[in-house]
Length: 120
Image (tube, rainbow, N blue to C red; front, side):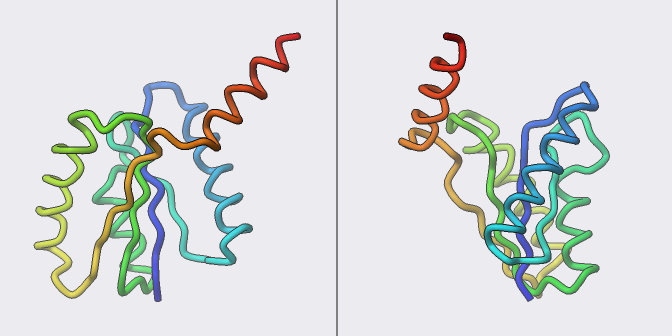
């Protein structure tokens, strides 16, 4: 079984967890995957390791991680890969792969255009 982990930066504001939970539900609906889980890099007990542990406990044999970051800064290029190395040692029998960050994607430009239009 495949697990999907959607990884956001995290915030001290609790509302961010509700937003990510909503996005997880939308991803589940669009992918028809049932094992989709949210995690945060910082400011939450629901961190990267806890998210992977949750997916493994629920039957994931492989995990795809999608980092919800616009830029490939230190979190994407160093922090997440370094943490994944440590976590992979704990789950040697689980294949863990990470997608590219969100980055320069035309679909994000469309969202920005929609927001501009909504201002009036």
